[in-house]
Length: 200
Length: 90
Image 1 (cartoon, rainbow over the protein chains, first blue to last red):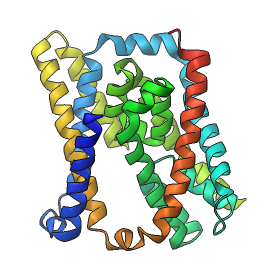
Image 2 (cartoon, rainbow over the protein chains, first blue to last red):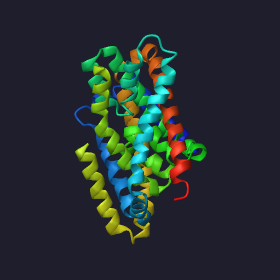
Image 3 (spheres, each protein chain N blue to C red):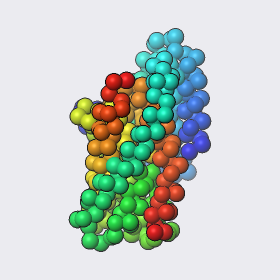
């Protein structure tokens, strides 16, 4: 919990700096956001590679790993269907297309913006950013109350990069490889599922 | 996407080679924590400086929050179910 509060305050600080200073112009030309992600990925790689349990976990889990992305897709569909009851502005398939970003906000919002409308594209962007933030903040709590797979499902496609470190620390390093594989599979599926839903 | 995966693969190879050196491994864990802080700060900056997002936060934001709450809650529940049935005894 302490970890999540510190993470939230860094995010809030960034939000305030981005809104009320010209920090983004000072940083312009350099994609610091991607660079810090690359740095993080490199460090997480070292962490996984130096842990003998990671490879062992992969050997033990084999095809069962595929159950995790399946659970995420089914769970997201059920959850979005449920909340669609309370939304009048958009239809079920439109909301499902937003949900099918699985946290991959850059790609899903562009696809939705191009195939549907700017407004739904913004919803997709915000909704999938929020999915990532919820996972970053709550992964430790989710792991305690709902088991070690639930933080991976909550993270969606981001479980391969941005939320991988927090999942790895909340669920244990032996879940880092399943989390990575889960994220890769969903990342590959996002453009297909989103396009399919919008064409229905 | 390709960059992220290959950078990570490189790190994994390096980690595999360095795993006997306990000091490097524990220093790496600390660095990960700082990298998460940096990443979240930068994410805040890019959202905060995007006027289109900041101005639409109130109206479309509520809708987005509803969808993400449903998506996350549903995913957590199915994740909980498969953990109980298939993974608990691993």
